[in-house]
Amino acid sequence: MGKRRTAGIGACVALLMLATACGSDDGSGSASSAGAKSSGGCPSGVKEELQTKLDKYRAVPAFEAPGPAFDASKAQGKKIFNIPLLSTDTFNQIVDKASEKAAKAAGLQFVQYNNEGDPSQWVAGMNQAISQKADLIILEGGPDPGALKPQIAAAKKAGIPVISTHRFDHDAVDQMLSEFDLDAIVPANHYLGSGELTADYAMVNSDCNVNALILEAADVQPTSAGITSRFQDELKKYCPDSCKATAVNMPFSDWAQKAAGEMQSKLNQDPKINFIAPNFDQGAIYARKAILSAGANDRVKIVAYNGSAPVMQMLADEQSVISEVGEPLEWLGWQNIDQALRILSGVPPTTAGTPIRLFDKSNIAETGDPVVQTQGYGEASAYENGFKQLWGLG
Image 1: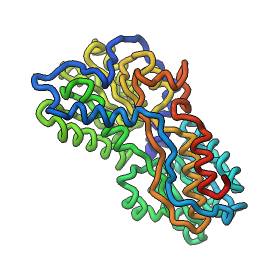
Image 2: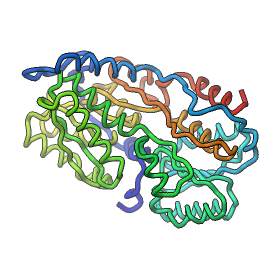
Image 3: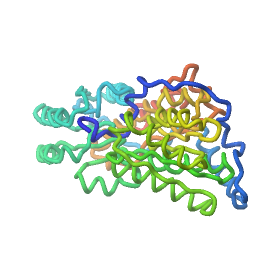
Image 4: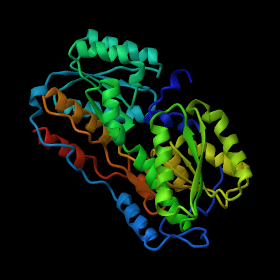
């Protein structure tokens, strides 16, 4: 898909600010009150169990140390070279700005390599980092390490560690570290947020009567397939007799042109579909178009993941989206620097990422009016001071 074929998950929302959803409805519901009931409803105790789980993720996340405290003064003055997936993407911009702030607080040099998301530019950035004798390279949010194997090997030879952030799920860390010879990964909660919690929300909302259509990105692997599998497994675990999910699988690069039409066709073919679950929330824009075109506004709801402002606004405006799982991107920027500092200080890296939060009509107002993508996750001082204390700077 040209420059986007190797898109990382954070940048899957890059085009959202250019899209608009129309219309509004009052059928968005909430996971605290069931939607249409199946003949049997949820098995005994299932709805209560899932509701308790969802309530946990509705809460403002609290800072938890990603690993043991350490003396970060050993890393002062060292140079971090940050290569984002796409410098014009809102996700990368928020994360990179926060990373620069965290690096400054820790006394690091922070070099930002701006690029337009073309793999050849990532290659040039890696070569520039090596020639400038950087002390560590961050592939932020996240350039495909599969497209950079020779450059990662060259960095290794030069004694420069390389870490990848927010591209791979927690469950894939060990495999990806080995496959790409990375020094560390800051993982994401893709499978939990987009696969598991979206399925849980749909089950509670429908009293375990889920007939979901999943929009999968064939070229964002292994993440997209992992999300789909987690969603389907969650349904099989709790309501195998009354819940099911099928997937529409196409390259992410084709979503803008083809996803709405393909989903509309599926909605017309199966009038019992009642949820759409895009792996990444840019798909909510196209799902909304499909729902309206199919005349399915009263029966089909969207459960989403990524926390991008346009889709959060759809939730606030009751435009088909009934839940959205997001994460604190500024916090992620500090987490990236924590991982870098551990390596530069001779401390073993962690496998920690950032927390996620479930938004629905019960708490979406906390994100502002209109929605601000960085709001709704508590005070920044909580995690900033937490990291500084870990680094011996508090």
